[in-house]
Amino acid sequence: MAVSVNDCVDCERLVSRRKENAINFPTYYNRPVLADGYEKTKFLIVGLAPGLHGANATGLPFDGDFAGRFLKQCLKENGFKLQKERNSGAFTYCITNAVKCFPPSNRPLQSEINNCLRHLKKEISVVQPNFILCLGVVAHNAVVRACKEDILVKFQHGNSFRIGQRIIFDSYHPSKRNILTKRLTSEMFRIILKKISKEIEKVLPEE
Image (cartoon, rainbow, N blue to C red; front, side, top):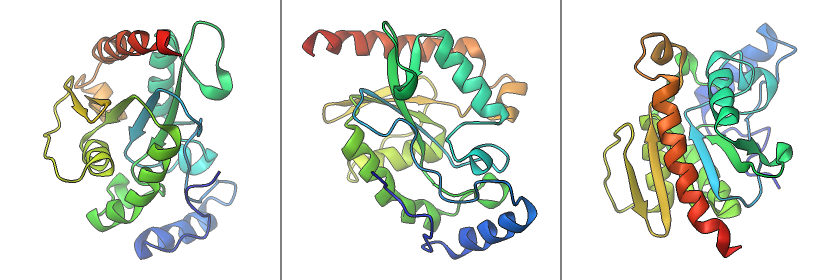
């Protein structure tokens, strides 16, 4: 079930960069990157946008680059698995980005974030998560708007808040810069994942 299309032309700048990347990196995916684990599950992770040599190359969110390796390792160590990797005793999750195409310098314009918002809304409506983890300010703002546009909640690492029946969690993005400067550490991220695990455990008996 697609939430975007490979020939999307909503954002002129991103379309132009996709064409350039297709020439410069002909073996890369170079198309809008959709959610991984796109089916109903309790936990959704939302990042910023595909990395040039990560998701833009592989076609999978947080795959193939530094941020993806850090994130997936932390998730695995704390008992989280993608839907396609699920096994007994593991919490499943879906992962996506606020912006579906690689933006120059990893900095999407507000107009590009706005254009992609409809895709994020569709993903949330399909996944129906009880819990959403926002990786960074852009993801935080997009998720808040996608869930309920008429509230203002400031991003704060480690914070959690409710929108309707959902609990939203904030974390710094696991970018290489944030990890190397220790703005975000594996221990800091583990604390957030443990909080999410406890919340998921509360709703599991209802199934």
